[in-house]
Image 1: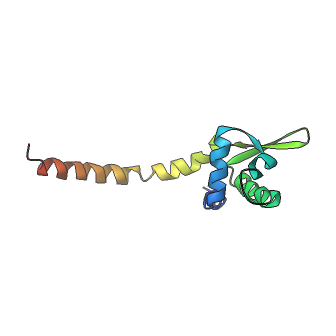
Image 2 (image 1 turned 120 degrees about the horizontal axis):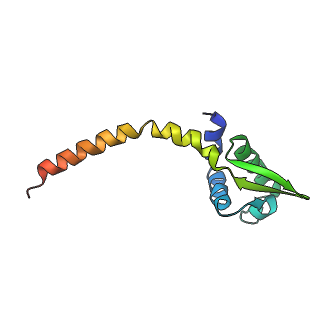
Image 3 (image 1 turned 45 degrees about the vertical axis):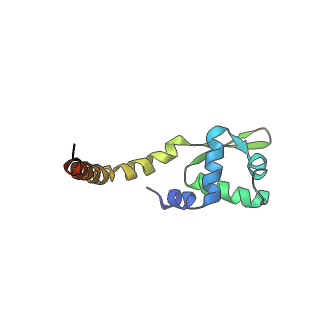
Length: 104
């Protein structure tokens, strides 16, 4: 998994942009209208998200549309799922403890 993906997710503005792109594809102007920052600043955030493979960009006429790339999240999901057994074991242990303490 790429460090650029984690870097892209590390910023709250970029996470907010991803949430917006989950609803619809947007131009830089569409995104910048949602924030109190310049188009250049928004473009930098979008560039980081694209480098992290979390969004794709397509040209349509003079506009560039940014779209969420669901496949870009697969490496993150796969990496996190490695730790599922950690939680499964702990939750099973907690369940056992709670059942032993239950007086009914």
